[in-house]
Amino acid sequence: MIKSELNTKASDKNLEAIRHFSEQYAKRSETYFCAEPSVTAIVIEGLAKHKDELGAPLCPCRHYEDKEAEVAAAFWNCPCVPMRERKECHCMLFLMAGNEFAGGKQEIHMETIKQVRDTMG
Image (cartoon, rainbow, N blue to C red; front, side, top):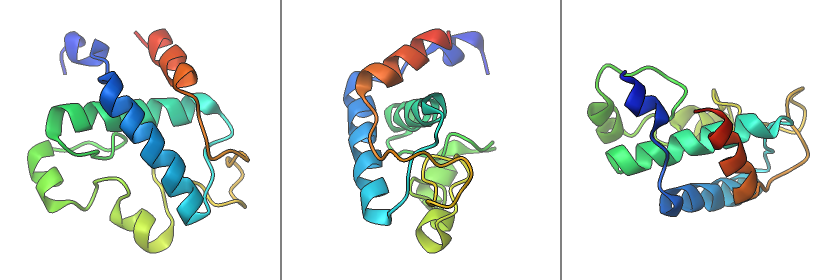
């Protein structure tokens, strides 16, 4: 990966769409965001970047040989199959209430996401 790819930010449109989706999905699935808001912000940013680049919110926490093929297979598109079937989120975006890393929140503000993103450059 070249450095310019690392510094590319997700579009505000997809960042807001993924933030909204994540909040709604957490409520529907009775899961919670990580107690550390930066984890949630980084994952949402990664999902939004993949939505920009690939047209789908491919899990940003995995390595792929062929991202386009993975998007087409849909297994790792958020919410991924392990999350939908077993409520297992590798990214720690959606955590069960009893998980030691789960916070009590199902919402995150855009300002928080952008602040974390801006510190990552």
